[in-house]
Length: 396
Image (cartoon, rainbow, N blue to C red; front, side, top):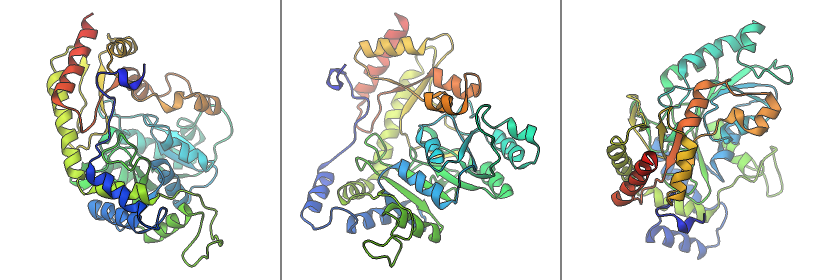
């Protein structure tokens, strides 16, 4: 079914005349790659989250990858992370030939369970092979690497429970790379998402709170690491290198000026955009509580500001999620399962031998979760229509 056949869009970026003019203004300059707009965009994000450094990159994935490099993660190293996420949070570990070590999640938020993180960290740093093997993939090569880092993911715009994770990281000398690609503007106990670990990464895909089309941003208080990340994103050119001189093995992970100009324009009204998404979520919460068998998203007391990325409901066990999704599609309402567990992706199964039952909470959330149409541009009438169609599908 083509997108224009749907009664409401699955998502929609909010682009206004100022955004369009910002892009046109760049076309009147000599800068289309790294130039003044990316510097201004970086300054706006740095100021917004109150970090020392902000580095614009071509996507959230590339930002995470650069953080893995800057953290010194080597082939064979181990990194604790979540199987309930978009695949990039694990892929960036594999890019460096390190091993993602999955820990199951909190059944309410879908974020990393700090109790399991603590147990995994203790076991993995011990010399007890039996304890270590409890957390490592069951198939494949020997895993003798050292535990180096934790990559929590702020799922759907809600920060993970960072205070216990920070304590665990400090105790075991681990780096925290905060995947806040879905959570710019969110707050954990009054502290901005993205600033809670050693590194934080935001993403600006068209369905995010603000968009650059494609793009991302790394934030950190580590000035030395920031210098390295800036070099790595630009083919490994360090400060002082000439055009064809490269200190590091780097990448073309640059953010272009057109994207940066759009991001800068959107940052000027980020709080307004987040507030509009909150109103849409509030309307969904109000309407969906009337439908039996539907669980609305749980917001933890530690989340002092939610920054809604997507709106994901969960069905009770007696409701077939996939059958309901098919009915909604037939009713011209677009929906998406959210998330498909990373450990059950074909390439992860092939590489590590994971199987169903390895991470039961993640698998349960993956079976029951469904993302409904959501964006800051949705009207109350559109939300009501989605809820009406959902109720009809469940009753038929």
